[in-house]
Length: 152
Image (tube, rainbow, N blue to C red; front, top):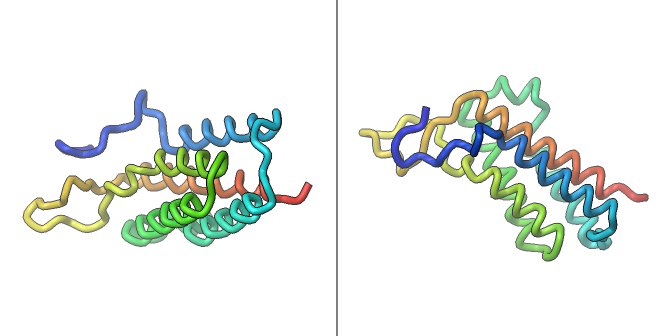
């Protein structure tokens, strides 16, 4: 349950995973109808970003066994990888990654530690389901980036 000043829940209880799935679907559609043509440098960045996301968020079976603080650190590392790629590119890839990163924004409002005297700077402790949802969204994004960066 989120307290006052906490980030709002997704509209209609949609999840981070749902939002990223929608962004992935739209990107795949643009690639299919060739309104988005992935240039060689963007392909390399997509592959590099997918690897960074994979390295940050391990396999679901082992990752979910980690303490909350480690899971949260891994999610933040994934967001940092997205931010770095967004800063290094432009056009469709940047727009797509920015869209996905914005759906992961609640992660930046999460904390794993108890706040001293209730002073948490408007952060909240995520539920296990929220962590799993965000991790799944990152894995979906990494899988899509791997797909689009494969040689054709």
